[in-house]
Length: 463
Image (tube, rainbow, N blue to C red):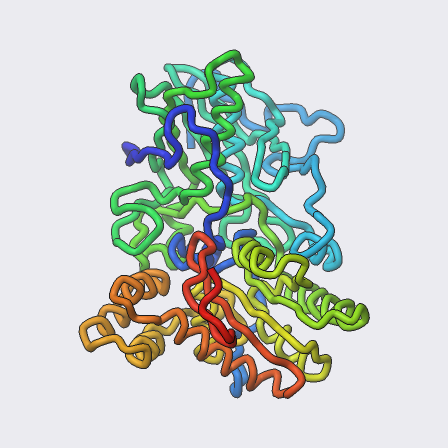
């Protein structure tokens, strides 16, 4: 099947930009929603208990092809597709420290796998040899190495494949083979992307990519491009190559039927996702225990302000607003934070998350995972009406493909849906905590980590 091409967001020779895009999306199997972006950026949550709401119970062949079973594994190298991280995922606080406390093993996103396959393929096209394992550069200084599952060189192209390892909480893409086929592009074209077999195409507006583009999310595009540029420089090139990158995922079209992709207008396959490239496993019991431990440590240290965040972008937002604040990576487990604070109060709680996640809390959901709860657009429409939207805009919100699109429509019309959602979420949070010793602030962010709504602040929305 011919690939659908689209240019990468960084131009030829442009250095990779800082990764500040919003929380990585979630949906059944994570690759569901390139759109919702209310998810933390360390993607691919695992399974867990049923949804909880407050007050209720809740393939390639060709020349010089080599398959992994034909390749001896050097001593000490990880099994095919499993990245080994040269730099610890712990930075001593927040999400990474909490991951250390939980004892869970992180994994790698489809975006990281595509970056590894792309770097290996471009290196082979330039030098005639595939690096195996191949080391890549990811945001936040991580440099994992990936073994190759398959490789092929010839006919003016190079293909490398990596098998996805999602860590201790695998999703529907666990074990998927992610391939990148690279060939030289037209002079001056820069790095462009195409969707191969098993990678979807965007067919509806309201997503972070234009209609007709391959469903390779903007942040993965940037670090895939950065790794290709780095490989180009290592081989003596300028670091600004003209390359066509075709990403494919074996059986991706059938796997995508178990995600929300068809519903939100991503057709033909999966999305390539991952704001940081790392999959944080959220085993319910282990992660909830680490949240409780974080609150206990804060209380023991006399801390008077803690912040619960849903992901990397919301964490960055809070750190910018409140340098040095005690961070709790609540992920999807809002209920774990709120219920524990009922009997273990801290005077001030700031909740910060993507708009879609906070809209679920506003509707009374305490588990924000897309496997178990979805955005209720009927409820969102009622909040839009409360915020002052007219009948036509209310209908647009009701039928919007994503929560982010609904928020954008209201923002363009001057309707403060973000503030209204944050206020409703604050009301729910205070009801669950049910302790006058705890005050709550709520912040909603968009895909780029910008504040789009707030509640519980004396002054205007923090910028």
